[in-house]
Image (tube, rainbow, N blue to C red):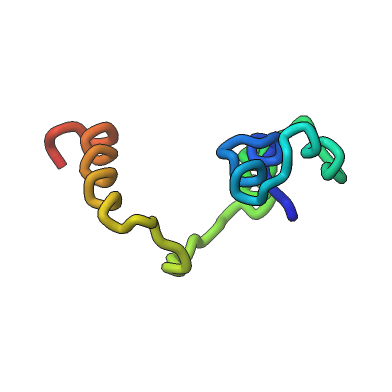
Length: 84
């Protein structure tokens, strides 16, 4: 499985609590690591492509769904201020 170093080192507890892997055993499951983060590789891919055309796929959702509106309102306030 490919994942960020944050997750691979136990961040978010997906591997430790979610998958039940003890934190001290995570390093033994690592096959490859890099000093660059995912944003770096995404940036390089976009630079190489020159033009990208993002497509909305609606293939994910936030659970619990009732968090969506509260978070959306908060983020809109942070991003755009009181006026939209």
